[in-house]
Amino acid sequence: MLLISIRLALQSIQRNALRSFLTVLGIVIGVGAVIAMVTIGNGTTERVKADLSRLGSNLLSVSPGQFGPGRASSDARPFNARDVEALRTQLQGVKAVAPVSQKSVTVISGTDNRITIVSGTENEFFIAQDWSLMQGRIFLEGEIRSGVAVCVIGQTVRDKLFGSAEPIGKPMRAGKVSCEVIGLLATRGLTSFGLDQDDIVIMPLRTFQRRISGSTDIARIMVSARDGVDTAQIQSDIERVMRERRNVPPGKEDDFTVRDMKQIAQATTSTAAMLTGLLGAVAAVSLLVGGIGIMNIMLVSVTERTREIGIRLAIGALEHQVLSQFLVEAVALSVLGGLIGVCLGLGLAFVAAVGMKLPFIVDLRIVIVASLFSALVGVVFGYFPARRAARLDPIEALRHE
Image (cartoon, rainbow, N blue to C red; front, side, top):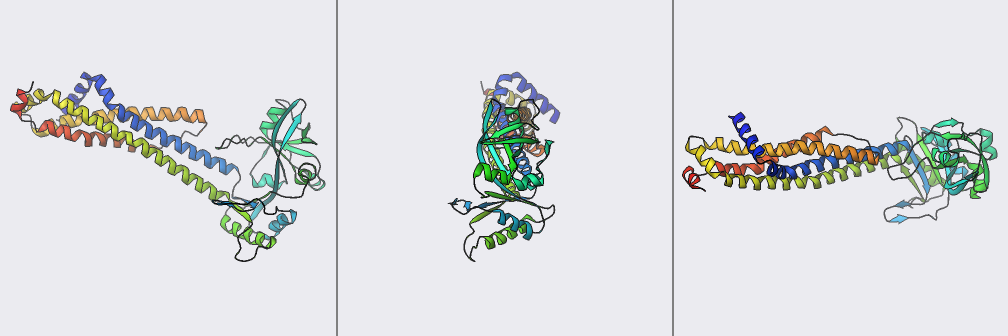
């Protein structure tokens, strides 16, 4: 009997192909929107996680001043070399402590120039950031101590200033400083916020302080914990050491900020996942709209086929057989719309992922849930019209014109 109901349902859909297509359009849009939104959201979340992981493993950043919701201070005194040395000697379980100072500077090579970020640091910066070199070398100890004008550049700087030419050993001007390029950083690309990580020039900290910034101030200290070490404990130790170094009395707020990149990654991932769920929920509303459309068309179909229903009931068809015929037709419409919607959603998500350079991550759970939900919509919204058809009085139905 079920096979007969399916056959009759498909014949009815085929007879009214255009109307059937317009009926399932709401389901198609609903399922497609849910799958596309969730898939793009998952790709964005993975992109953010990958970007944060490229900043360095188990990384903590220490900055002067307090920053956060409702508070911001930039007048706190900067760090110095003794602060860096204190962290290196007093912290346990760290693999790198790197001082960093930065400034936006015009860099020049031949007739080409651009404004980029010049960072002054030490070799531990490359360890803390997990940043390897594509060519060349990092700084020698003598270069760091004496402040020799050498530099390591990112791929973007290389492309803009040197093109396809070999940059290693070539001179380059950073502001008023002429430095020799000794290394080329491995490519990292854009962050999820659109920042070009490869648009950077790195030179020894002492060279930067003497010839670019003109001071011994250190703007930020990067601390990288060893694998397996609890970064929360490292953060607590950093706060203890820096409070002592900066003479912060008990009970008074720190005049510095310690950011754990792992916590930032978790918070960012959680926020992205919440937004993805919200977008999926909003898109799911169109499934309800599609269900209402199916219910409306099924009611019209019952009205149009009243005489047919009366004939079937008059020759011995039972109520549950008529009920199943119209219910199967409603479910078939919604399932068809669901399958088309799945294909449409995955296609749109793939195009968006390629265009936005996001990972294309298909969540099979959301595909299955969206498909089952579309079938459920057919059952729920198709039941009332089917029930109405099954309860028609055969005599009245035969009289219907």
